Image (spheres, rainbow, N blue to C red):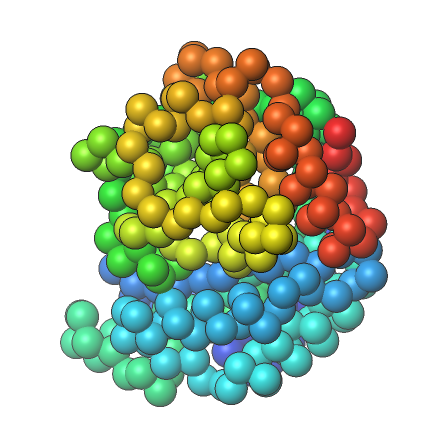
Length: 285
């Protein structure tokens, strides 16, 4: 779906996107109280790993005290119905839920959240990102509620000018000498036959978990803390995310990673991932 957004789901109904309105006193607006999840459909019109995304959305909601107003099965059905109504094909699906209208400023009615689903055009990174690799910048930060995908992206948004200035594709968060996660991605390093990724203090990405399953028969897998010095001495570094798949990283903070080229192990995992998803507008090596 490459055209404009046509329909969205809003509080129980599928309506034209232009008619969806959120109240100015919604807790998502006044207090930043909400969760979301982003999934992706491919050219066949099916959302990849949909059940896993729905499960994570429910987990995020539970973590901060929100209660989705439908079952997991119903949410999955609504997503596929909405995607089809918007023309199907390759698209990005965004599910958002907030506390809704406040009861007395901070308290809210769990039975009346605000929930909406958007079908967004999918815009892939340029082919050069996957062919030649790309850059990261680091920033000292540790997210609150790391196991929940909350709507609080203040740090990431405020750093966008700096990110663009440094020509970095993402911001990699580090905390007290340890690597955590990127602002919208998980990070992996490769050292010899070891594929290593952080586990503590991060959001457990759906694509992250899928890549771990792909890598397990071929590599020694380690989910553990990664010191920043390990990051810079790694043979290869790559990111994983729903809307990025696997992105090779060849430079961090101006320092070359490995030989400065996309590594053979990253290439292998990129191709294995593509075999599972089918055709995509993301052009690989």
